[in-house]
Length: 376
Image 1: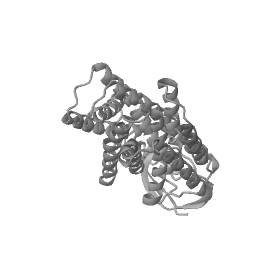
Image 2 (image 1 turned 180 degrees about the vertical axis):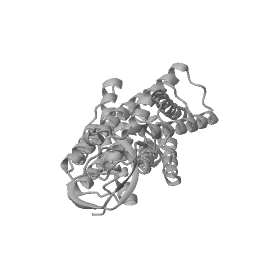
Image 3 (image 1 turned 90 degrees about the horizontal axis):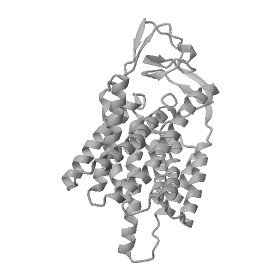
Image 4 (image 1 turned 90 degrees about the vertical axis):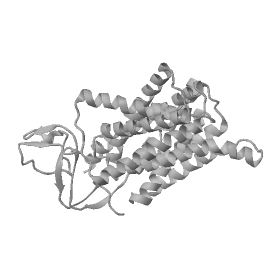
């Protein structure tokens, strides 16, 4: 049974880490675009450009691949809409606002708070299990975030409030992205590129409209193109990979692996833009790094019971998918390709259709994915 985790679990881990690298690189690059275009409306304009790039890029990809449009029920549509508002409408504007008045390296590391908040919400709202190792890692990440956001000067209250706002804006962005992660978890079985495309187009158009209503000037072609390319990679491709991670790992574990993103951003900020390597930055990096290591080295296994379940998602015939295919052709009800009967599913062929799970009790290492959301 351990093999099941090694296949699906490792696929989720690599997807989360790849997503983290792309998103982490986007923070210092977005900072450079903000520095080149000062102005009050720029955070909305840049957020809109980044997300528009992600949505349009994935739309082109889906058209080239001729991928079908998934069909969502009312409940799934609600969760997707909620994730778009939180993660595509509110969070990126808060992040851009914070970036206007703090270094990219500090902002990058402060984004580690997203993993902590994602885990807390997954535990509080969706009852995902959090072991002692995960909780201790979260505490270390929080300690690093507090250290980074602490005001440097000993001035008056108004000065401290002014210094606190950029860090608070980034932390609020993390809170909305944490909500986004948990809401997206509810539809993670759906085609990841379609989810990322819809979120990108919706958030991009909304933020661009807000920017122009606020008085933003039309950006240069070069500036808009740069923002859209960065957005396609750091938001579009990254989000599609993160949805895959959510599918296999659950929200809290996917968030833990994704929390390596700030380190990518911090390193690039130092190497490319000359941000200072301060004692506070090193101390916060050490605390957060230890917290991330505790998350990445978790091993969760115990006797557990699967209840009878019927749903549709992409799968192979592993220990949790032992069913027969009765029709000559099966079509993916949630968007995908037609699978001929007789295909060697047992050899690992990935396919999707409506299927049922019989009750099952066994023990193996696992994550809180769609098949392992059980009480402890």
